[in-house]
Length: 353
Ligand SMILES: Cc1cc2nc3c(=O)[nH]c(=O)nc-3n(C[C@H](O)[C@H](O)[C@H](O)COP(=O)(O)OP(=O)(O)OC[C@H]3O[C@@H](n4cnc5c(N)ncnc54)[C@H](O)[C@@H]3O)c2cc1C
Image 1: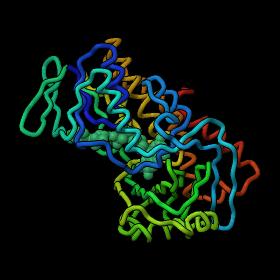
Image 2 (image 1 turned 180 degrees about the horizontal axis):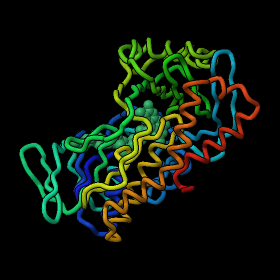
Image 3 (image 1 turned 30 degrees about the vertical axis):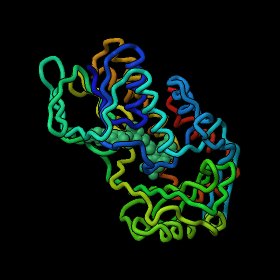
Image 4 (image 1 turned 60 degrees about the horizontal axis):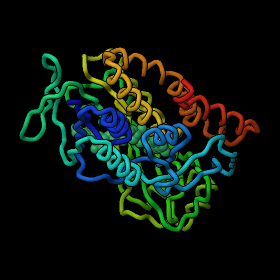
């Protein structure tokens, strides 16, 4: 039996591919049901291509088509047509659809089960669940951005704070809008049925934004005239933003690792959020790990290959994140914004590697 720990995009992608090939798959997820998580909810062409392989389409799931990108900083703003198709799709919907697809493919989903530890044993792995111990031949580790117990993330950079809030009273139009502000940057995207998702990455201290929805909206709005205009009538859907601390942007798992343990998604690499490529990387790494397992490839060889494949997307994203932090005006000032953004958008796509 192959145990997949974590039913996010990465774990579900691996589970679907393995179960479809007739392998016995146990998908273990600590949350009882799919729910909203801190995410900008932008799906680009790479995510759509991976979803198509898994039998899903963003549009059929109710994703809102996004045609443009725009950036606001201070009094300046710039915009350009996106060089590929993209959608805004709430995570609860996406994760729910992926879990259903995994079960339909033949995987056994145990939701509401937090895996407490994993130890190698001759010929496989032993997993500790609440009140029981189970054996697995291989383990696919897809638990997201934080360290799984017993598997510290060597070299993980200092964590950022991620925040997300659904808003009514905002017309985000057909655009993904990047809004840098003092302390970080936010993305604003339309939601199916109206309203918008406001999602931000903050450097360093959390500040008031994490504690109060209105303070979060105000902090983003202060960064630009565009933000102030778009958020003027915003009505927070929740009292407090969803928050996740310690996001290790730039982390990449080492090339090696123990036999039979495949690290995927954010367990393998955490790409800066402004790229909107995290879900794409997660889905593609899940498909790649399943392909490696089906081919009988050792985990260390898969890990080394995935590390190589994610090198350029991570480098381009790191460069963009650095510019965004040091000189956010660069994203609005130059006449070259559209070609530069297109270059960045191409460079961060894992399907090109
Ligand atoms: C601020 C922010 C904005 C972002 N915006 C975007 C965006 O617009 N577009 C985009 O593509 N990406 C975006 N991302 C990145 C994206 O959210 C992640 O890259 C993606 O969710 C990674 O998928 P994953 O399956 O690896 O992990 P996750 O989605 O985190 O899934 C991990 C799963 O494992 C489960 N789990 C964890 N521990 C255990 C355990 N011990 N036992 C059982 N289950 C466990 C969790 O409950 C969860 O369901 C953003 C991230 C942040 C922080």
